[in-house]
Length: 137
Length: 350
Image (cartoon, rainbow over all chains, first blue to last red):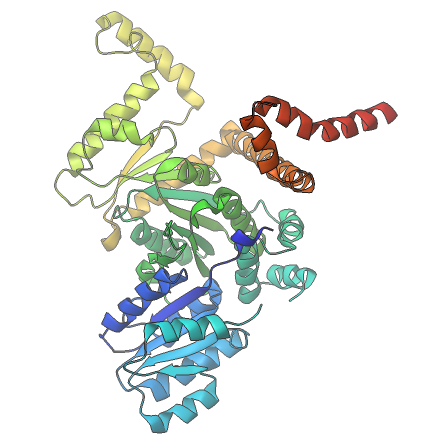
């Protein structure tokens, strides 16, 4: 196949739980789109199982979870565990964006989160990180 | 995952394998052809329904409700939703999934977003191959959802057994409908958002357009024919078209699920018609013939592209054409000559 047919990276931008703040997720979705990615946006108030369903079925390279509600310690590991059940965790890059206190970061990373982007992260840095770390398939 | 393993797991009902198979098909990964080949013999069980209509006509919402109703009846569902991609960056936001609220966490509704990927072409091939994967997986109903504009889209819905066209109320006068060329492709017209003002008028306009089309040549069943001749042709029409499908019109309010039962009945009627009339097989034959032609075109193109490259690239030939040393026809003949010679040689040995 010729080089110009190389595939676009697929990303799921997900809002999980009772968290109505979607401005950030919208900005990220657009930025990723403009970087040439295929972005699937979950919409607001999704349950962990919906995120898992979408990640598995859409076969995304990257799952980005946006969470500003403070419930990350419960919801994120739940998603990761279910992904594992579908053998989908190993080859999906999982990143979390939002307000995550420093003391929670280690546990999230141990649960399988690859990177955490807090407030003030530049979009270029994020795009670059995703390009560099997207799983080889 | 190796390809034979992927096929095995897909047939065993692993969602992850189905998802990966569709990715490989979409990205045209090496080996995707063998993959689709291996899946083909396991297909034929699914009923494929194309859903098209302008942006905002309610396709995704209706698809969600249809999927949920099929699930209530114990059927499994696959959905392929195609969204446009940016012609500049190739990027896309695929948003149809947001509307799938009725099928939360139900893995037996397999929903997959696909981007149109601009100039890549072959979207209809990729869609048909993705349908093959869903069919082989064992889905009972496969819904293919796409914005109804342009040849690409029409090619895609042609992969369906039944084509549903959504027409929002107040979508302009009848000229708009003629222009869009949607009348020819629709088996079932759905006036969605039927609670909005103008819905009755849209239904009426559609009905007139369909009847006009069914009536055929103006003059035999046109407005200006004598009363007697209209009656006569009317009679013969009904005899003649006894086995024909007259496009149906159904009104729905998808977000409230209204009209969905009736729509399902109409879809079932069309399915029965396809089987009774033999249309299903005729359509499948046409589809496969077209698919073979497309593949051959792509493959010979690729073969020739290699040959052109080997002989110094197309620019060299273009230079000579510009300098009036040769012409495009002669160049084409020259490049095809080895292929023709090879075929002649083979025929000679037969």
